[in-house]
Length: 451
Image (cartoon, rainbow, N blue to C red; front, side, top):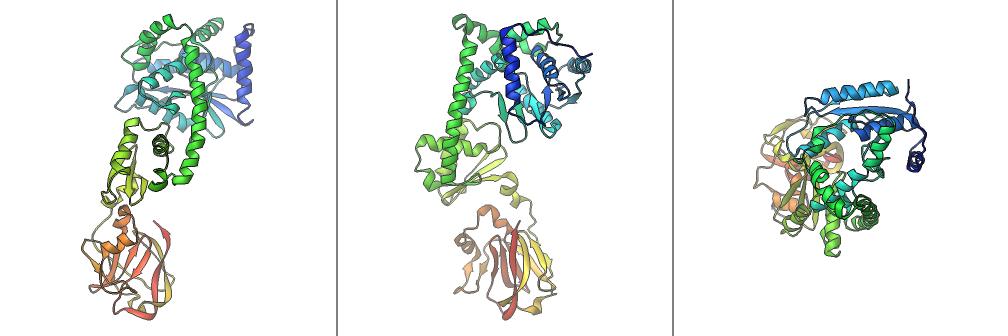
């Protein structure tokens, strides 16, 4: 049998229910809800309330971090409670990576949430007023900026999920009172009282001291987070304008960037580095980007690695490259290979892209069609007599003049036959070389798509 809630005879209980229903209107009518339930008093209350307010639209998920011997038993407790409430429930074991245990457990938990969320499903979490205050305080102590001090929002739309925290303005005292009215059972995680963990230390040691002096501290910190959210929204508008002026998510132009104030430069670089990640880089990492990359000499080829991306300077731009792009040169073969081109309109793929063999007024001799050609990567020191230019040039200089990015130069491939250079495949197309095979009514590869 589905349990029923007691009469909403408390003013704040009635107001809470009204707020939840109003907040739910921000989602579509087709939305359903996945509740992250740990078995603690706050998430168990959330489970009961959501099943009461949104019957048939609720699922639950218990993420088993497998860090304690009781974790599987807690999962069974949550599962049994869900069965009594007629709420489908999934128990999902995860492996927590090494490192900061709190951070890695959170990462594993949210990864599980993302994998189990269905289309049009909102993730509902039981964060409350004390959680919000603790988050703000811990971020303040870690040196966070405006975005970090915004802490948690009631509705948080991310790239892969939408989070809803309907209990964010409820105090823990209100939650425990309501749970007692429901005669609701819950589990107690001993790590919540272990001061070896930052959040538990904050809750067990720091909080009582602060509340003796500032009894309404939690409410005050909650207001601060709302003010910081307003400030963050205003800052986001400024940053979007600055990014449009200076570049995009892939690169920034240094000259317009340096016309901004130092504060706006620092904020834009932090915003740009964040990309689609949940959190921005710390202050020290942004400073490293400025000193090691932005202020580096143009030919220094400096690179900064952070969160799977490499930040590099090339001439008057800085680029944000994923690891696959930046490290690609290490994975490509350097041994020469054979290539045969049999006919016009044939498509060929090389490291720099896909090419179509087309007839040209001036190009390579059709006698080469069907013959074994050699395709080789640069070894260094090659010289080329490009068609239309006077004399022989170092290939490296030609690449520099064409402004081909250093991290793409491994895709340069030289086409030759019998030690005669026919041309060069580059990310900007095929360059014809002056040779005995250059004739009227010939053919050339034309770049149709980059790799």
